[in-house]
Image (cartoon, rainbow, N blue to C red; front, side, top):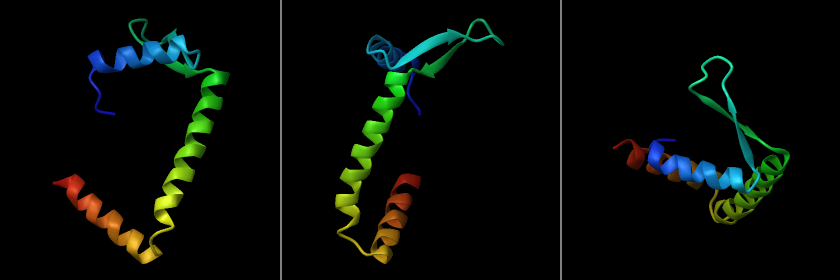
Length: 81
């Protein structure tokens, strides 16, 4: 995700406080934690995914398949430079 630890930890703290995830100590390496989505976290993630898909569909519907492929290629070029 290319997020430094100083930025990631507060995000994880908020997600944990909201009840969306929990941190478990790794059984393999006790210095590490595993992040586990809770039931509420899975429901929230599914709801957000649906909203994202609905939002993006509004943009995709404005283009033909060919135009969408071109747009993706143009964006890929920008990203890679």
